Structure formats: structure tokens, C-alpha cells
Length: 385
Image (tube, rainbow, N blue to C red; front, side, top):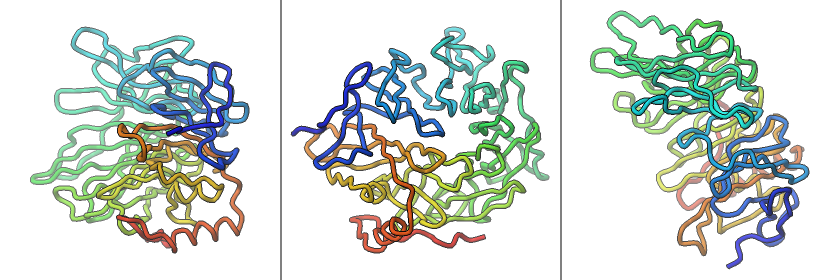
């Protein structure tokens, strides 16, 4: 079975493919065992993993440049929005690894000779958040070239409670805001409290009363808006299904319920103002990429791509990993499930026309008509306040 055809010659090899019979010029994939790590906010270029190498690929021209002959970090896909800086940890002695950043021009830079990892960065990679490992638990930190690593202060716990640790895993593009979580212990209870640090001051973000585990997933470019989610089936809370949350600058939240049949959510990207969010919806039997917008609710990647003529019944579109700020370019991962015993993963990129009224009606109609084998439902059009 021929999996891909219509290859487009690239500057450093044939990496771009128009995929499937009747393929649209606005949809390309990159072959088996490839992955897409990120997309620049302007939608012009992405980082592509291919056979152990990392390329920067340009959407308009299909030109590719080799960034690295190897993946810099094995356990981290975190990077700056301009795709210049990778984050993770590197060994500094035989037993320990410390937080580090990697750039093609400079290679690895150990941020501090202390056990921990780097998890998120500002647009240009010059403000970094992460965690250091301590005997009593992790400690969130902020790093800049001028200040070095600065540990972030803990929340003040309520009477009878103890802070067990904190982690910083999101940084706004402008570097003004860091988000993560704080682990809080009370007798017979463990809470993971979403936390935001502005000007170095920690603020606990409220969550629904039934939830005790929640996380922040993305910050708006200016750090004023945050999206995250509660976790399903926690040992203390009684929520069997996750819920997506948005927090405003004052820390107030609104709830967006998941479509019927979907149990959990992984938020992977969003536009600068978080008016559009992308990621993965998870049911008991499958994962599917999604796009969420208030006027559309949740739209599966399969349905979104169908509006530009892309239908691939032999693929599962498992995620949408990133989206450009204008909402027109998306990247993600698919899994080939027919004619492939190894079910290889494939990176892809698509350009979606600016949706007019007809397109919105089409997407809404797709949800109304959909009858998925294990998870069907309509988006929540009216999030609770």
C-alpha cells in the first residue's frame, strides 16, 4: 500500500507530502515516524522530527533546514514560541542532572548546577520556568540571563495545611507571568492547586469545589488569561470527567464541559489571546485532536480537516499540537491504523481558510450529524460561569 504521494522537494531532502487521493494543497504530512514539535505564532515555520533529526520547515516555501542531527532532550518537548530554544535537563555529574536550555548556535547551557529541569520559556527563550528538586519536594524557579535561577515563593497555606512543593511549567510569551501548580497537604487530603506568579508573587487559582486536582496548561501572550483543566477520577474529588477551565486576570474562572463521551483533555496550544485552544480529547477507547472556540465549541480534527476536503479514514488524528495566532495554520500528529501493523505516527500541517458563516454552519452540522463509534456528542456552547 502506498501511504503518501505527491512529494514536494525540500531544500534538505524530500520531507513534505500531499497526502491521500484528491489531496488539498493546504494539507501536507511528513511521512511515517515523524513528529511536529511546535509552530511559530505567525504560522510560518515549524519544528519537525524526522528519523532522529530536527528540521525547521517553512510552511509557505516548503524549505527545510537541519537544526540538529539529534533531538537535544529525550524527555522534553518544551520550547520557546520562536522555536529557537529547547528546554529540559542535562547531567552535571554522574548522578544528577540540572535545568538547561539548548540552542543551535550555542548548544547546551546549564542554568544552575542543581538537580531539576526547565519546563517553559518566553517567546525568545530568555525567561525560563521550571523546578528544582529538594528533599521535601520540588521548588518552582524563574531564570533570566541577568538574574540566574531565582526560586519562586510558595503560597501561604491555610491553617492545618502544608505546602509540599511547587512547579513552574508555563511562561507567557512576554515573560511577565509564570504558571504551574502547588502541592498542598492537609490531613487525609492532597490538593494540586493551580498557581500563577506575577511579579514574583504567588496567587492560588480557584477551582470547582468537587475537584482537588487541576492544572494550568497555557498562558495568553500577555499572561492575563490562563487555560487549564481539572483531572478526572481523583482519589478525593468526585468528578468522573475532566472539565476545561479559563481564568481571567482577576483569577476568576469559568467552566467548559467536555462533549459527551470524552473523559479527559490534554491542552497543547492556543492563540495569543486563548480565544482558540487545541489539543487532545480522550475517551475510554481513543484519543482525538480537537479545536475549541466559543462560537464553535469543540470540533474534532477529522471534522475540521473535512472542511478543506481532507478525509483519511485510515488515519486517526490524535492531536492538534499547535495553532497560529490567526487560527489558520494547525499542526499535529496522526496514526495510521489501516494497512500498517505497527500503527506508525505521522506529523502533519494544514492551512484552514478564515471561517465565514457557511464554514461555521458546516462545522456545527458535522457535530449534529456525527455518530462516533464510542464517543459522540455536541460541544458545550454555553460555558458555566
